[in-house]
Image 1 (cartoon, helix red, strand yellow):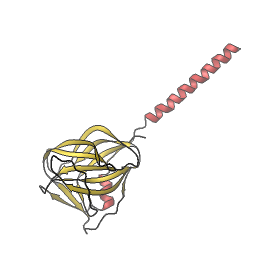
Image 2 (cartoon, helix red, strand yellow):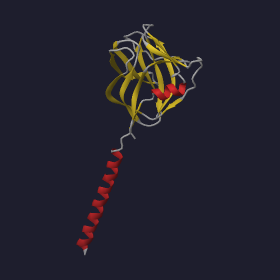
Image 3 (cartoon, rainbow, N blue to C red):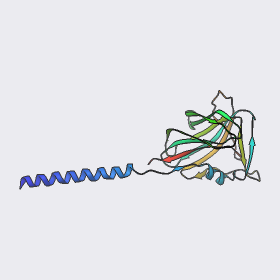
Image 4 (tube, one colour):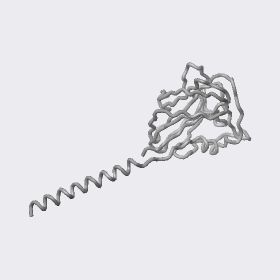
Length: 197
């Protein structure tokens, strides 16, 4: 009888371990779809209404600040500019400390053609503010047709865009943008974000 109780106890423990392991496997197997916040940002701001190519107009570091609504990661960078650039630098910043988290260089071999570069994943923390910039003398200037301002924040899926800014720069400098503007967006640059939990 004592042996039977021991066997029963061992079986209960084994079933419990297998059950917990199965639950963990289910949680780990959830894979969220990638999101590109640019289209929702342009629609929410109204900056999808008018686009003008600007080329060779002085070098600037420009881009948008944002907060993820969930923990996640950036898997790739996406850019479209109106000129060729074999060494276009894109940078992710910690907005609070104004320090660089990661910079990547992308080759843009053809003007006005979208280029995507898959990168080693960059982890993002829920509700932490980041700044996403490009260093270039070319951009697509996007505005509303009436020239009016956008109202921030703008929700774009799991990304909340908190503003746009720029600063005069050089090709060799990476400077945090401090000149905020709400009447236009210079782009196009974005990323693919994927929720992780």
